[in-house]
Image (cartoon, rainbow, N blue to C red; front, side):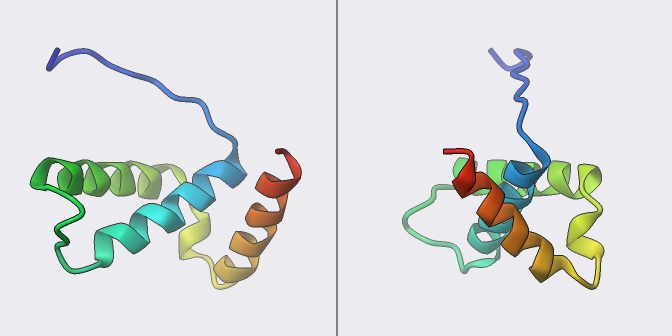
Length: 76
């Protein structure tokens, strides 16, 4: 199972929201809610999203997050 690859396809808006959520969770003090493996996976996902997204590094990032939230909610 260690070499099995799972690929996911998500929209840019979903990726921005996922990055926000993962960054919030990953930046919190180690919590009893997450074990070491879960924390490590969050860090891996955060790093992968940082490589794919330029938005978190833009000055207008918070505006982009707001737009992404609206888009995700509209797509429900």
